[in-house]
View 1 (cartoon, rainbow, N blue to C red):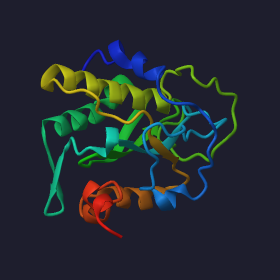
View 2: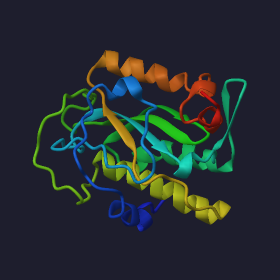
View 3: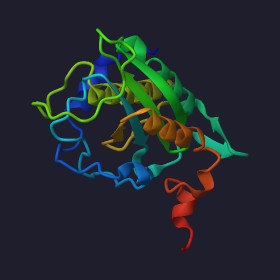
View 4: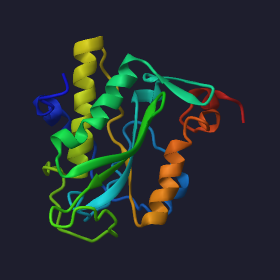
Length: 213
């Protein structure tokens, strides 16, 4: 059921938001401050997202609805849809051989994870500062981060429809941060791992959002 992802991926490739430039400065310190559905793309203009690198990715459900399970005693309890999300994430390297998936967490209404894209000639090299390149925005690039994420989202949507009769799972866009060095990686990895324990204070938690200030 996990194969044949590309049957549905192009619906996502050509329907996701604009590509306007938004600064990524200091966004790592406000990882939970996401915009609402319909927000502008936050891709870094001129950056080649198919080049080797480590990328922190967050993908949020439509309207921040808690679709993937619940947090109990600081641990995530996945439901059937949450297990599909987890399985599709771990299957990413099967469909993109030059990638690895690293630290990952399914939360009730969003997903955090680190994706590593390797250079074929220097496998293991993952940190790279942003380098301006000529980019064809709006045109899918095989093996690029946007293609990987959209394919993952499409795979989840397809399996959810087939197995659970579910649809309308994701917000249109996603958040990413380019890992700069080992310290950056460790900070983000710790953040991801501690997400379930900190769910009560998570800005994506709908109960927190509805609480009076």
